[in-house]
Image (tube, rainbow, N blue to C red):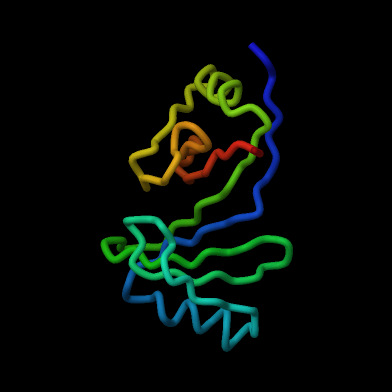
Length: 127
């Protein structure tokens, strides 16, 4: 089996409960003075509102998820060979958990996975 290459992605997502979402957006925009932009349609059916924050070379997505009771941080990992990456992860006991947030093209271009601590990662092909 080919050995895939993994690299950090340029997207982080903070999943935020409704009760603290507006204050969190204001923190990055008004307190820290970061560039914050509202996203009209994130394309994620579980997300009811979204903003992006320029976080250096990274985009931090602030996503309001109304049924969450606490925040979660989601990360992105990129790979040059999605099929080989799935195989390598399966060998390590890591299986896709695509049900966490359905995305267009999922399975062909990306998968959701969780690390052993339960932190969600988008595993995306470089193509």
